Length: 385
Figure 1 (cartoon, one colour):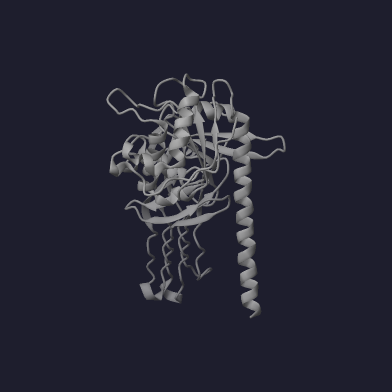
Figure 2: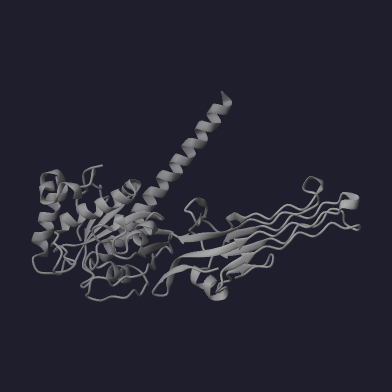
């Protein structure tokens, strides 16, 4: 897609009761935030059969992951430091009960927005809303005539829990673009703010509160750098989280950006192209998300002149592709729904930005509802035929 709009003026529980659970190892942690964890899960062993009367042992219990609110990976690690979860064994067959009882299941409470993969990288499933359940280790079968009344062991493996934040809006920008400052201005979040490049080393979530009591969640994610798609810098730690946001809010410094003396200076326009390229190389579907653009630091000298030049470049981006090397140019440019000049220092444009965010999300929700009703209508019409 190409083109651009005109600028506007200005105490959790980690594991639920179920069966014998707990004890594993391995997690990635930066700051006080953990976004992935390796745990050991083991289904229960089946019960013994009873040869004399042809009795069948009970099946071993299963291990389930259940999405719960107010739970995070850090709380699971704190409560179960060994990170091992095992279900109960099935009951043996006996004269009194020829069919043994099934072993107790183990239910592990996990945060919303978890992707579960096996240790070899195969996706097992996702848990996105409260109450979602995922079977991660099946219990063994009880002994019976076919197995000579000997039971089988439960499934045992190491799985990875990978958290991808779920937020309405994800902030996209290179380090020091002012994302943390912007989040603090538009929401009640209090992220770390400083004048050095990598301020944000862990995701920060804030809520924008509106007079009509609507709340919109905004995620400030670790800053991208060139080459993030190849896992340079925060790399995939950033890009994986942005997959679970409904819309994107690009934040650029109107005066341009330079990570260090060893790296090239990039104008605001070049920054947009590079950010777009990073998203494209990681997952081109990210470019289809609705996007807004906040042009920050409008309080700086020459900001108006820089903004005028920036807008001219955005109107006809192809005319300025020569400013970057060919491999750095995205296949398509992002069409911003709104472009809002702001200053987190003076407060310029902040209220307008909050309004644009709300309106954009409302529009998308209306589209989704219309699409849903159209699909339902098509199904009903097909049934009538």
